[in-house]
Amino acid sequence: LYTASRIAHVDWQNEQLENEVAQLQTILIDALSIDPFIDIDSLKQQVNVPPFDPGVLAVPLAPPRLEAYLPQGLSGFQKIVPGAKERHAQQTAQAHERHRADSATYQAQEQSRLQALAQAKQQYDQKVAEAEQQVSKHNADIATFQKEFAQGGTQAVDDYFTMVLNASTYPEGFPQQV
Picture 1 (cartoon, rainbow, N blue to C red):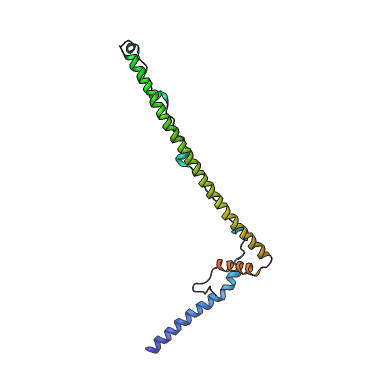
Picture 2 (picture 1 turned 60 degrees about the vertical axis):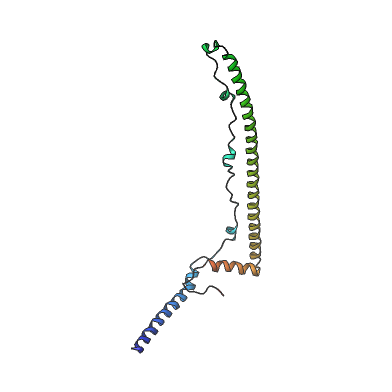
């Protein structure tokens, strides 16, 4: 019984080993059927920032309209009521005063909104400039790598083939680190 189980285990191990050998024998054929070329220009990046969206800061506040403050005009009958003209004149003066006060508040709020809008735009422009700088540096590094690779620089060639090997597919369990 022990011998039979050992023979079965060895047979199973031999079968596993034969499967691995078969996979290894096809690695070269599989690798040659795939174009490993990596276009170095494709490694370059584009600046990708969304357009400036200030949200509610872009919407001007509605200025107060004097018409909304003024009392209704006196009708024909109201004009003959004693003291009505004076009350109407007083209400009109108060309306003008409220309108002036609300206009001053509006001006302050609108100025604050414009300052916040300018600050948001400045922050956006700064982020765009930073993104452009990062992409420019990255693309300059790629151009340097491309030039060194074309000149056969040892490190550049090694890096290129490392990228090719990293992009390749291998059988499960195949060692990929040296």
